[in-house]
Image (cartoon, rainbow, N blue to C red; front, side, top):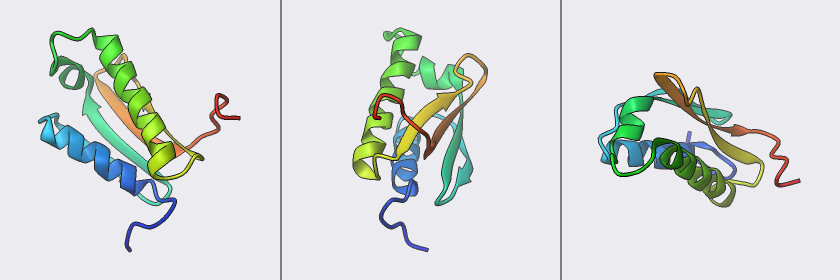
Length: 102
């Protein structure tokens, strides 16, 4: 099925492309119309730019992609990172009530 309106796979494909271009190993755990889950090694994700503080880099990408999905897909979609402080971090695009947007 093609990617259409209000489909998180548009943002998931964009994030996957960015990670692949920056040579960050990643694995798609879910790539459906309902949810995107991309597993990445936190050290590799954060370690590719040694001059940037780790927490600022992670927060920067999370904020960027969170706001992008609201523009590229729909305001009801969000992007967030799970398990930021563990080895296997997960980038998620899904429907989530964003209290900042209400």
